[in-house]
Image 1: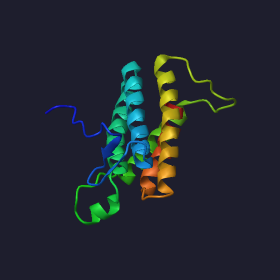
Image 2: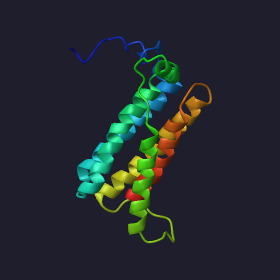
Image 3: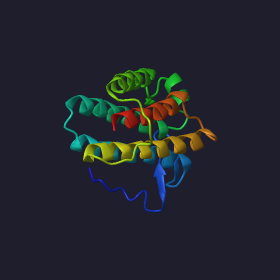
Image 4: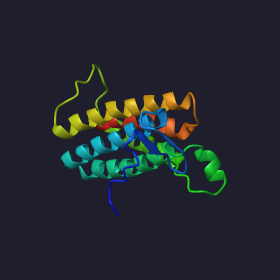
Length: 168
């Protein structure tokens, strides 16, 4: 199988189970930002010495694949109700992030000032990931103003940026 198809040469791409759209469409911007976030997290994982945090981030990366698939699927709820393939972020993923946040916060001193992004390479990568996550959330919120986006997807991105902040 060849990686190139030439079908996107005119500035369009195909959505999962749906029509072709322009590559700058809101839906494409949203799942593209999630894809970028996943790549930035890969950089953080590569820089980490902490195997526990690495395992958490690997789970996040897996969930981000589901989230990207959900955002790339028009009318995902209808597809799921019809028994068709419809990737969706499970609510348990949000609960897992909250558990991790609570555990990490117990190890941290209370904040008394702003945190400058930087420090160790892994921490800097996590701060970068946090800002990309916020952009992905903004793109998803923009999309949700005109098309279906699950509350779970939006909540996951919001909670993920909190997790990335305490993890950094």
